[in-house]
Image 1 (cartoon, rainbow, N blue to C red):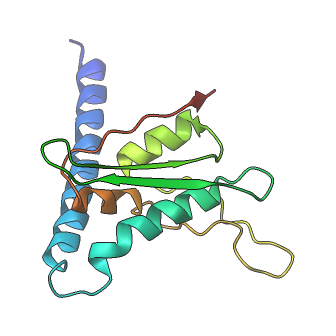
Image 2: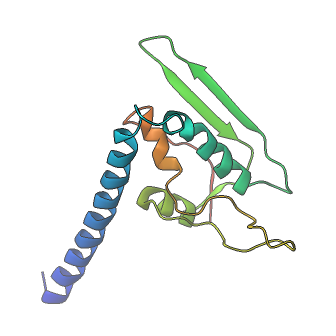
Image 3: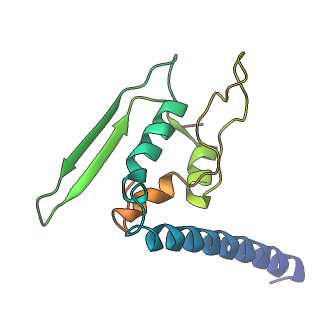
Length: 138
């Protein structure tokens, strides 16, 4: 491996470590407040609804939440009819970066709700394992 290749590989490793550290810190903070906050345990559902609202099609989006809490296959399924994931959406979801526009409507209100890219992270309060499926567009 050349010096340049090694340097580039270490740059990527460093970036991955920064992302992992940020996610670990934010998730640890959320988990530490679950028992003392009336809102944290319920926050995941509102965050997912806000994310769905932000990818509406023509101002409309339908949300469907299904909870099957019977063991051993207990699960919660959340789906919506919003826009498909872009490559940027997927990458930023993994790296916990907000990909949402900061543009405002004619009254000065933000068009999208999401801001910090942490909404999806709250789903990990339900389970450390989260399966994401969907349609991607290029």
